[in-house]
Image 1 (cartoon, one colour):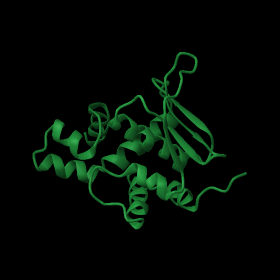
Image 2: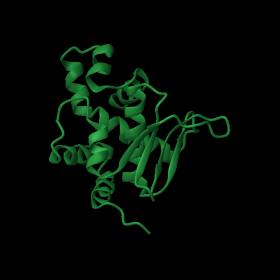
Image 3: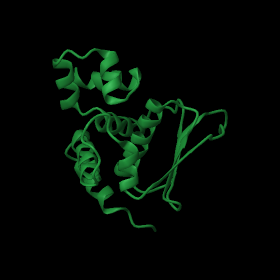
Image 4: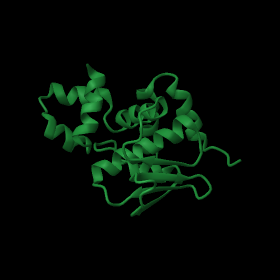
Length: 169
């Protein structure tokens, strides 16, 4: 069995304190590795700081489902489907990072329109908190930022922003 990166273990422990704490720890690692604390969060640099390779490629469908991305434990590599726009890629990468943090170092694939289950919901919550910390989103709203500005500042899609805004309600 391949040992899990010690940072991943720390993040998983932080999840017990809530998804925002786990995402905050992820950002802290990025900051310790000279990643800018500004937004949008540099997800690719965080992944690189964890010594995970990142490959952009056109991934073929599987059983008529589009594959958004996958992770190979043996290759210590994340594969992201190159046919999607940058905001989608950022969320999928954050989502996959959430799986690593919360569910361990194991192979997985992310399917487009995968049925909702608790594990996928946890990874979505993690991704939303990583990309759009509630404190930062709340501050931006108080400053009068509208949806298009929020999407630009955090580098997310309308769907991802809507998901996180629901958590503020």
